[in-house]
Length: 372
Image (cartoon, rainbow, N blue to C red):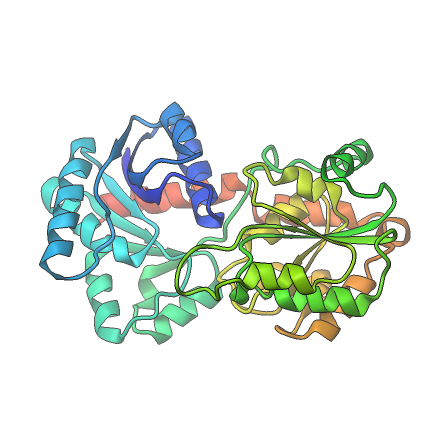
């Protein structure tokens, strides 16, 4: 099967980009021909070139409106048609115009993976629904939400995100010692890590407030914030700088890194205080390495943290509740040493890359053979 996909930037900006490169790599390992078109190169470029049949640069694949936008999409589609795809796999509704143009040129089927909600009206959703053969969502929450906005839920299949346990190995005691030295952390401190974009919707200000309320001295506890504020008008300017200036002792700030595993191995707990999450992939990444995750009960997050892990949830924006959840886990390695095993077990049963790719492979095959 020949699969064509696209990325605006071949960079590890977040979970969508990492998910795409890992899924495409696994599909290539299973014998499928993968092609990628992109607008800007980046740190994932060499990895894509290592397993793809072709990696071509083009104009933007996202329709920006008007005649100029159509010309841009048509130009990108002409480049994409060289891959002669059977399936065009997109990760954003705004790429559907490009995918439809490729379909006109090649007869390929379109599968659109919905990773976040696009704030658009029902007319837009109806148009998008007419373009794609099949939609995929990582959570029941996102499936329901798109249904409420006018997309036919009967054409949205829920496939949870997954990670390779080889990419996110469980950390040992020696890993913890080594990685704490890497980040300059005390060997015996309680360490909480946040990993992601430092923007208002991720709730990092709530986490800093909760850390202040926890009241632990810097020699006993550290908050490790690994992430960078995005550029762009939609985010509050100076948000990261203001947070750093007002943060209590024990807060440490690092830029986003390609290899996130050392941050997990150095930590005792992951905190995800987002105001919205379609899924919450970083939770799965952290638990695969053997550390529990505390997260706000929004979007698709409760679908991951269910059963015994429901106690790790807190109401969004509630710094007091977050502080309480973190405080309850200060001594978990001694009081509940089996928790690490249960975290890894949850991921291995429900959220592996192999399960994700097998599900997508089945969807691609079914879509390809379904009569148009």
